[in-house]
Length: 125
Image (cartoon, rainbow, N blue to C red; front, side):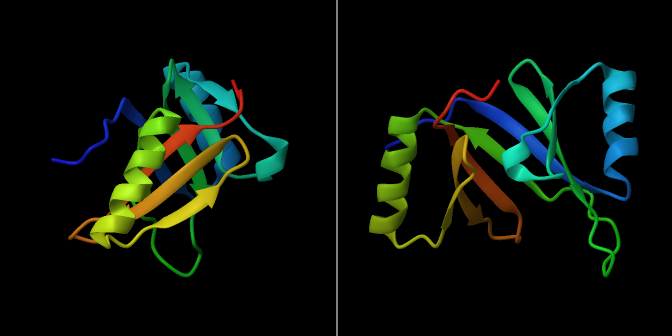
């Protein structure tokens, strides 16, 4: 059993043909709250229902639309640090990224799915 604890599913990321059209659909159809950060540029566009969200990314024109890009679990910062240390000690491959408001660890499951563990580091919304 790992020595850290997840809080909740933070977001699911999907690739879409038209960012604006998709964002408007999720806002207007489901009532999700749109969040965009200047620091991130035009993508992703976050669409939130309370603390769970959808992240829209542009589709890669060289490939067909991917249904799901990745999914993410939210963690408290101290749990994030414990997880990072655990992965290092267990020699579990991961990539860490700083997203200005969040830090994330990206892992790949046995079937090739990208799993993100994310923690807020600044007040964003």
